[in-house]
Length: 194
Length: 194
DNA sequence: TTCATTCTATACCGAACGGTATAAACTGTC
DNA sequence: GACAGTTTATACCGTTCGGTATAGAATGAA
Image (cartoon, rainbow over all chains, first blue to last red; front, side, top):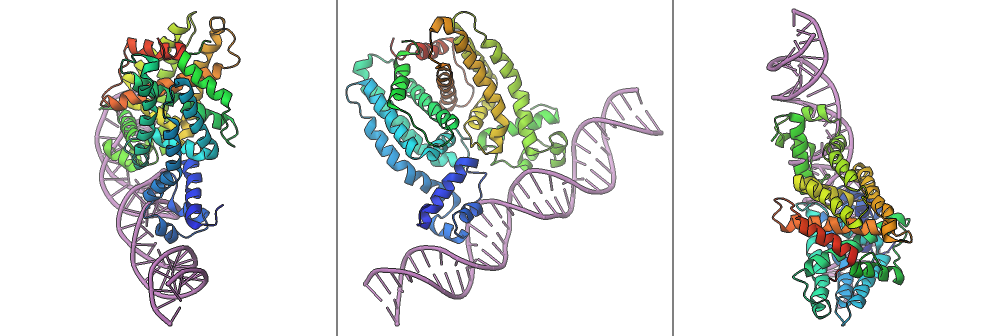
């Protein structure tokens, strides 16, 4: 656990939000488990929502930067997709709870405030991935406007794979090997045969 | 709105859980919006959790029956997968809010009680879909134990497609045409080319 | 020494939470 | 008319919710 109070609060919040969900966790408990009083929590974060926002910012921003880099098309679709999945995998390996939390928030109810907090982030992610398919037009030929469908399908595939891996893997870490990444991308590109 | 009180409560609960999530909705509000007092709600459902359980049962059970039927392998993988997606599509078309709620619960935090309620249902769904790939062994050849990966990938693809369709389609209904279903299954089987 | 920052302890706020008690009605059936 | 099932109105329970007020103490930099 970090010595810095602010950081410790963020980490505790992540643990609890991951385990029980944003709405089911009270500010009181977060403060207690951080070894801090409630006023201290409110000193750093103006509200419970602000706490979530700053959690998303501090942990998500570095990941989005990495991902954007990884999504730059370099002339080969398969290679680019593998790089992208690699970035996701690295991130999920470093911060598995945060990764799973992101997914839960992404699929959570639209009028819940926690969704409001995560929405802009996920839109950026979606756009970055979609840009790969736009850039790969020369390689893929006419996609008939299916870039969005491709990217959504791709994201869905990776997300579910990730979550399942974490669930069935003892929740210790998410480790996706290079071979697995290639198999995943290969399946996406060429189907389940081969 | 149904005249039957029990049914009206279930419908109201679905509306609210869908919109804001299980934890964020109070029993009080459900009762009020159903035109019923709180004791009446507790007369039918012993607890808030019981209400969720019965909601999942009453709406989910018919769907799971249909899906199981649709997942029976009939000698052709593509046809079977299309039938399965068709069953999901029909269900989602009939009861879109419930479908989206199911997905949200499926991805929600593991120690949240709402996940406990939906878990057995999703396990059944997963098993049914996986059975398709096991049955298709003759057609697919040696899958090297990747039946689970295939089924998870397939479910992820369908789920995300469904949710996105609902989100971007004005939330009126989920209509997946036969052509779309075929395209989705085709992409899954043969990749994004062709 | 002054000063802002960081944090404590304690206590409180009004509102909402899930759930229950009580006692009285209304309904249709036997 | 007795009866079970359904529903009401009202009020209450203890607990937790997110958030704040107050006043003081430790810290380190200027």
